[in-house]
Image 1 (cartoon, one colour):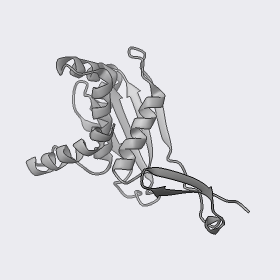
Image 2: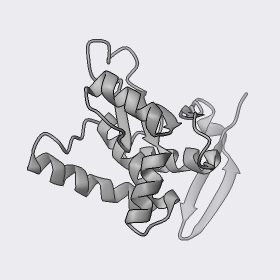
Image 3: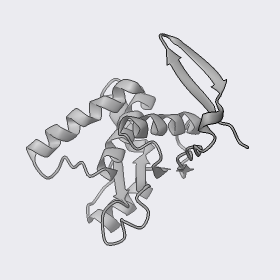
Image 4: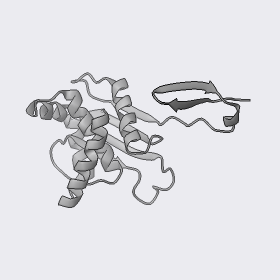
Length: 173
């Protein structure tokens, strides 16, 4: 017989105890956050990025989502920008959603891929007088919101809606 730990919150105290009545409850699977760092110009704290993604997905009520984060430089993101979005030049973030299209129903927990250029992020951080870490977190939130269907390019109303939603996860990071 397996017993799972039950957390009971009483005031500000958390009591941990084994409880035989919850032996039928399955443990929740942990989300899959895959990170591929394909650049060498900027040292990236991968464990911190993983925790940040987990906080963002939790704030968006999708704690079990599966996501891939690809960290690249400007030449790499420029190729993706040209190939998939038919745009020239580098950009800061590109999101490839797996929640859209003909086969999106096959695995609803599979959110998609977020690609971030550290070169562009570093330039934007410097121009905005913020840390690279803070700018990278902003781009993570922005890219993940795109995976959830938010789009700032369709209308001013959609841009305001995305900007408002953007603030919620940032306050938790």
